[in-house]
Length: 512
Image 1 (cartoon, helix red, strand yellow):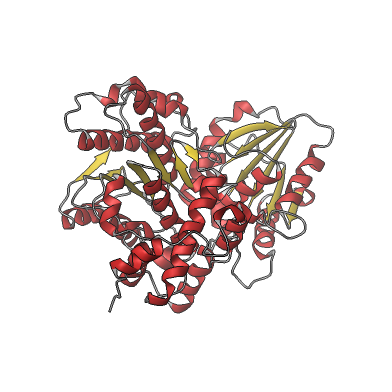
Image 2 (cartoon, helix red, strand yellow; image 1 turned 90 degrees about the horizontal axis):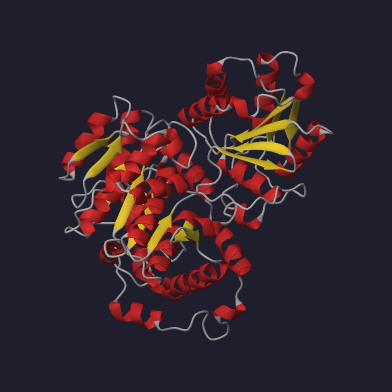
């Protein structure tokens, strides 16, 4: 039986001073918060445990999440006050959220009477700092605010543990989801863009009962051990966010996905609406590179349109053709996705694609930008994917896309790195939990497999293939390859965690 905490108990603990009688929030630092956060079991460990037990997420996980929400002082009905825009999908859901936030911020400036007063966004994973996951008005929450609200929630969970069905603290992703909601409530957010973590139906974020807008981005095969081994099974999970309160939006999908999405929308007593990129929307009009981003931008445009007209029914503005919308699409910031930078005289391309479909799209995009690096004498690929079952299939997908324009600019060097940040075998503390490696195979098994495949299929490159035990060493290898040259191009892809590690080592701020 699910044990609800009494109202008196919740009120009692909410009135406690943060940190109890012996410690105040001022005595706790951001570093303390990260240490506490990293003490929670990471997503990677949770997934491994579930695989080992042959168990998939179910209603029990939602019951636990509901109790956690109660323990920090909220009811599920409170989430409706956030006016949630809920986004699931396999590919592009983070980019879609970023477009949505950017558009809303422009509308906020141009039409303050119809726009939300405070825009919150919760996404995952982060590139460099965990603060990136929880944003207020387009900016990561400050370390000071993160620390303040982190320990408020930490102490509420500590104080209510004795009366809880499950006294353990929530795992990493669940904790951050709850923290995002706590921040949004505390900071007066009235438009919350929430990205699903994994799946949808049983995802931690799916306590939301009455979202304003729901959308499923492009679907593909990913997290199959948890979500199912077919597109149909995955579509069922993702569409679990559809609710009667909101039109069910999606983009163009593979054929086997659409019937499932439509069925799920009907079950939730709502209507499925398929959004296509309008003919007037061109790649040069949006701030994120890649033709595949047009579908994400179009979905964001429709989500904003739905949001404004549902929260402000009297609004008569045609947002699909308003300059504020186009300014939002153009000025969007979403680092680590088809991002090109020149750092210390070396051209870098960062993209966190990590599924076959996404990596192929990244390869196609990179091939279309060849004029930007065609003169490079040395073209280096840094690649890793530590958590997927078949890293070779992933690199093949990337090369398939890259070579779709011809093989006239092959990579001259390949570096296969781990996600460990530094040579002393430590991670940047804020990357530790998301980068935890849980398999028991040799530490460089993935890298050795990739290097072996490259040697067999890219003849004449044996001396140009390197294995980097850490991201820091991968960067050192790039500088050695570059030598005295001023004409080197480096592509980093296969993992957002690898991309984030590169940002840290290069001291390149993820948000500027």
